[in-house]
Length: 381
Image (cartoon, rainbow, N blue to C red; front, side, top):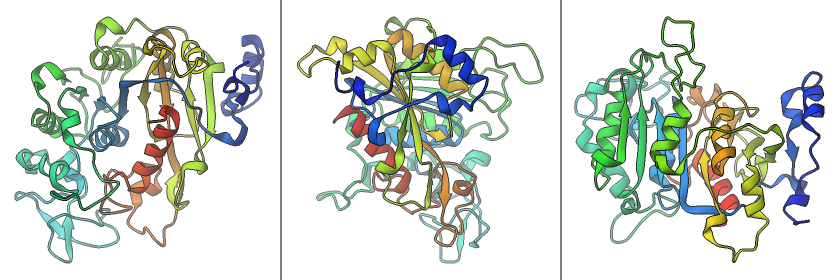
């Protein structure tokens, strides 16, 4: 028996799982590794993408650009442009900086003033899209690089593929907000017309729709498969079959405290990973095995305490197509004395607002660093 497989206790049969589900919380079903470390898997280089909706969509886009040497695509369901939340544009209206503003950091604001909260989502017309690529290209310094753990060389983005989605009844990301993300990628990819797919004609409210999600003001399922649309575009349709069966025994819980440098920044103590059967087999092979035995991976960072909802929809595709679903979780304790303006992080959201640090998009930022550590642990890169 392979040493990696011995890390996990033997899972009960499907009948036993059903019996357990009726009597205990869902999280009790997840296998746990000895010591809690996330397992090392055989992941395809060039086969890691990010995905998410709303604040998790912001983070999927943010992590894709910052860790672009490890991540080769993104599915952004309602997201704002990279570093936009703290960037002052010429058309911005400013407000007095207080502990209630939720924007403690602003790049370009005069002392005592800051940006209107969520200006990139609620006032996309204020955003100067021509300024957007400047930060990832120059923020780390040039000749020489001045910051370590910063942003990977943006040349790695040239051949990446991106799926963008904004429903027509989205009241959180107003019309133009996601179009600005498209405009940013258009300036950073080699052929954006063939590399970016932007769906903006589906009449949903603010959501990442799955087959069972109804259209706005409707009750019947619309049958729009958001996870499938995302995966078939970014991984290319000829490489992704239809969804398979979700196997609860393939969900594993790991200890995130092993990857935390700071216990007061809202990181949950546990995360989850879905490892399809074929990816468990690939992990048990020797490092000399061919790349055909490796698996792709989707990074689904979010506020979470379990593996449920759309996670399962992604996992169904994972099981059928050899795609690992890695789910780092935020939603933990926040030190309010140190971060009095981190209102969204206190609500369990990812720091896509610059509320924990002014360099919140850098690899060294609290939420970016812990997810980066977990990604490196799984891939060994």
